[in-house]
Amino acid sequence: MSLATALVTGNEPLPLLAETAVAQALARAGLTTANSVLLFLTPDFSRVGQACVTAAARAASCLQVAGGIAAGVFTEHGAVLDRPAAAVMVLGGAFSLIATDEASAKESALLSFAGGAMPPHWQNPPPRFGASFKGGIGHGEPAAWQAGRLTNTRSCTLAISGGRVDLGISSGLRLIGTPHGVDAARGYDLHSVGGCTALTSLLRALGSAGNDVAAASPQACCAVLIDDNHPGDAPTALAAGRFRPLPIVVVNADESLTLTEHVRPGQRLAWAIREPSTSAADMRHTLDRLAADSRDAKGALLFSCIGRGPYFYGGEDTDLALFAEYFPGLPLLGVYGTAQIAPGCAGSNRQLRHGAVAALLADH
Image (tube, helix red, strand yellow):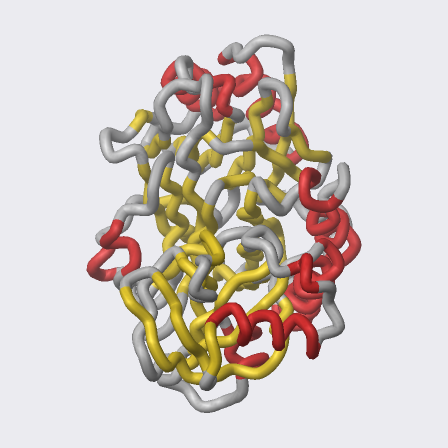
């Protein structure tokens, strides 16, 4: 095997866990050394990140160890969110991770991870996929590493050499109602859509979808800006990634809605709802497309939201279970972050909330 993973947990965040994970992954791959290593650690390791990276590099006999601190980690063997854990993928054979000149990376999406907020310039080409993790209360500073060292930027960017990367993006959303033009907006406040107040528009959409009005909470609903640069209906745009979800921050007394980004009059806006059943169905559709296009996958990466894993699905990560159903036994390395990074329109990139970005690694 050219790719293999391992997941090791412990009671204390010790570098030995990273070393053991690399050794187990090498054994599963039938390798004595690795070309490169992807290493992700839970927040318990925030203060010993460099020691863990050094231990992983020594165990793999390679210098290209990349990754970072994430909210949680998982492989095809399971997921860990509540204790120290090290998740590893070793790359051998033709596969490797290489530092790249971002200006020259025009076609292949770059693996990108930010141990903090997504850098603003990552919104621009070249295309990227990955995640960011802003950290949590009670833990040390966010961290990311590349070439066996913690980076000053708290981020890493690499190209995957030796194969192709096939991406699948699951927003976890289901459109409700039909898109309408924005009539009036000021700053972050959306005032009217389709000839009525923003709140009335949302409640009508919820009613037409047969949902209880109580579902109109910031956690369950969001606005979706549809990209108008491409023809097609809203469901097609959602499936193709030509959209930008805007969570609802608050419902105001004047029936306007405060969103997380500015909107402008004339933009096309739809409403969407996120529930466990709709997210699971959307993930299945994403995996349907990936399975049809990638029959020769050797491994996979999955970047999921901390708000979409076991906490969202009632104790079990349904997305991970679906992945195992579609790709049984395929080496998988995954992380839970606070935002997911995926290619958008015209080579740009965007952040998703409550999304999942899957990448299949296959031979050319």
